[in-house]
Image 1 (cartoon, rainbow, N blue to C red):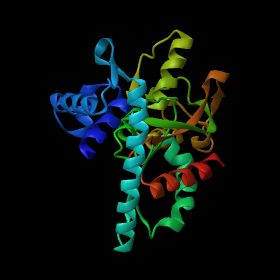
Image 2: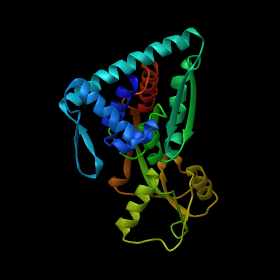
Image 3: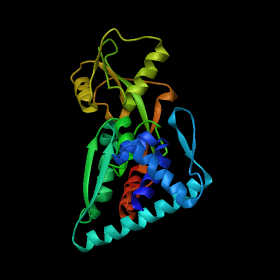
Image 4: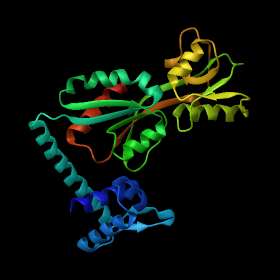
Length: 271
């Protein structure tokens, strides 16, 4: 029964049989067969099929989804209690965008310090799109990003504001983040606003490297005001460059303790 319910949850949250199969590491035909078996068991269709392979749950599908997530949560709670009784620590992976790691990571770690005996806590830094993918696939328990991205498999919580500025020598080479980065989104927005594409630019996949280059007097870039090195000149941008940090938490797949830790860290980062 667990594989059937696990498949239902994946399809509801992802919205496609093919992508759900990728998450579960089974074939699409297996996903289809499991959903068909569930539909026979409950005597009602569980999904409505749409164009481009998208599906949405029927009322019966939504009812069964709520029951399935409750069963999964209860199962994880029991596993959590067993692990605790054996002295094992629960895994907890928190992913931070590059700017978020500089601005928010310290307060998040401080809030989790008292839980280190209970959790195997790890952090990693990557761009916002990759974080959404990892949290959506439930391979990470918490993600912190700097652009308003979301899908059905995660809940998004607004944290705090972050002001972007134009930093560095304005006749210098542009230092830009890679595609998928939150900062790159706003850099491209500036170029569109100015109706100009820079003659020369260098893609740099690290905010710290960009900040170090600016501090050395090389280049110009769009960066968080909080990350501008001392003595680097800045230029204010418009209100559309006032962004926010967001927390992404998987809607399902977390134990009660993991979810509690995620919200503890979120509350600390709200400041």
